[in-house]
Image 1: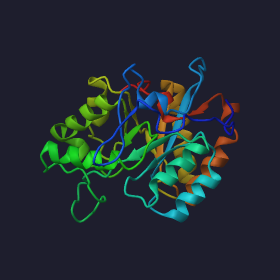
Image 2 (image 1 turned 135 degrees about the vertical axis):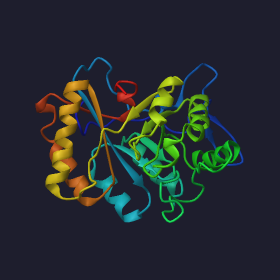
Image 3 (image 1 turned 120 degrees about the vertical axis):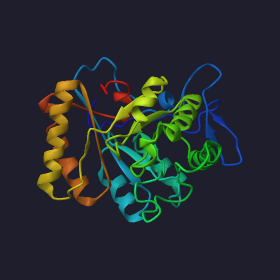
Image 4 (image 1 turned 60 degrees about the vertical axis):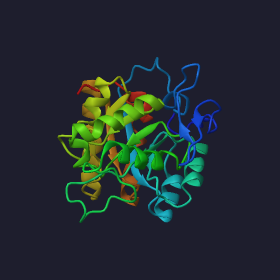
Amino acid sequence: MAVNEPVTLAPAPVPGLVEDSRNGPLPRIAEDGRKPWQVYARPFPAADRRPRIAIVLAEMGISGVTTGNALQKLPPTITLAFVPYAERLDNWVERARGKGHEVMLSIPMEPQDYPRNDPGPNALLSMLPPERNMERLEWSLGKAVGYVGITSTTGSKFTANPDAVNPVIAAMKARGLMVLDARANPRSVAGTLAGQAGVPRAFADRVIDRDLSRGAIDDQLAELETIAKANGAAVGIGAPYPSTIERINLWLTGLADRGIAIVPVSAVANMQKQ
């Protein structure tokens, strides 16, 4: 499948995969067993044996200008993770999916330096009881339809706390969603607990734009290739900065010639070793 090949995603919401709530439409597993993370995924041929790299750009929707630029310039093989509190979120998600992008929600979670660093409204906090965090999670999940799962680039404190993370994983399992552990903290347990619970999961191997210089981004993308060739799959995570988009697009031009497939994040679910 070519990088820019148009793919039509299932229009969201799909009947049977949604339940009404006071927080809006929430994803659910259909009576016949269909799961939102599979139905809303961007298709990728399972028979393709090439090493796979998924690139996820998170924090989409915070800036309308940045988000619009990303949608205009990025090929549809890049996965986009939107913050649930973005203005016009449903419109952004619909546009992204209309262009063929697989979509996730980037859930605000507690960072190490909270409250000095505010991750956003209705963030999941380790000090709150599980039922409060579930209310906050449902508030986020009800803001859009058509996403395959969740990630969090802010939760460096929350995701390292098993007692806080376990109820979130249970909710993902009940709703048929996948989890991308962004590893905001190297000691994050989110991906591990997801795997143990039978929830489809992926891990971010590299943050590709922690350093925004062109050479540094190129180096991170090259490292993803090395990881993918060694392990069969790799995931890079970043933000929709102009320099990030520019380097991704340049890198993609020769990727197929190097024997590597660019894939949606759902196509690397459960492929990575811990």
